[in-house]
Image (cartoon, rainbow, N blue to C red; front, side, top):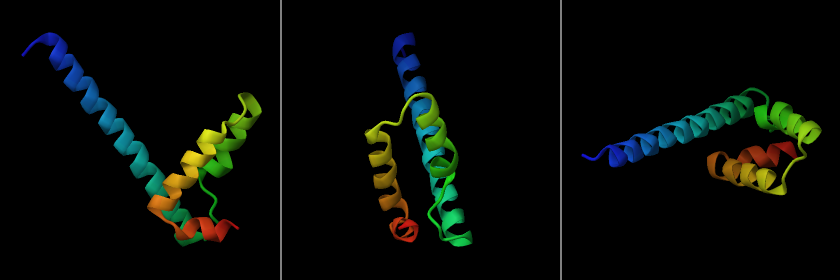
Length: 82
């Protein structure tokens, strides 16, 4: 196998591992918060979003992406926060 092709496959696999880990972390965070408090607040809402607003400004795309992800993972969680 050529070194360039091997490098591509390794970086692709590492990217999939990182994205899968982030998705799993989001799932666990949402599920535990929903079961424990049922208030819809997660690490993103409580910690990351205020930090981004204070330092760089929040992008509408980030909120849209987060809400779509939550709708996929646990749709009833968005109903709890309203």
